[in-house]
Length: 231
Image (cartoon, rainbow, N blue to C red; front, side, top):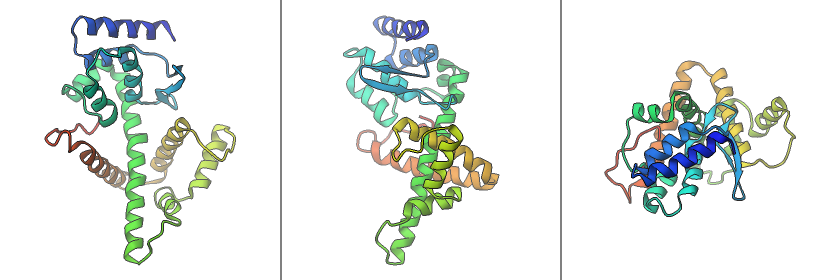
């Protein structure tokens, strides 16, 4: 752990001891944090994907490990599992606290990984619906049809190309961190291939699916909570 990271954790604990809202204190610690990844308590944490996409929720989870018993468990769970913060911050307030560079990297993660995954989900659901209309109730070929529709190639071919470009071994499995890196690579691959109108349409489709899922997850606990699309 770097000196800056140690200072971030010490400052976080001091801020909470002095009565600062724990969520704001965590965001301030995130601003100071420097390590792109680390091994802690038997787990590998990757905060920065491809040196560009910042998963601030994973870092918030790591920092919360330092605060056992110091923060309300329900608030912690709402943030880490549902993306619902204990207090509302505007986008500008959030950006000012974590810093402009981390905010940009956060947007890279949001659109390049999270939204990309929901685009794939939306397209696979569209394909399944079309199959059901035709009386086809199995999922055979759905994944590759979705990859072909979005990226113009099969999952196998794209994964092989990704690993070849990165000089990674052609394994039969992929780790979670590897999957995130592959998804970010797919995002860039799609942006290069598609025209702007298609990219905008894809983004709209993915965000619609993302909000649909978030509403289903949060409605039982927070039926009146307005979600920030970037949290």
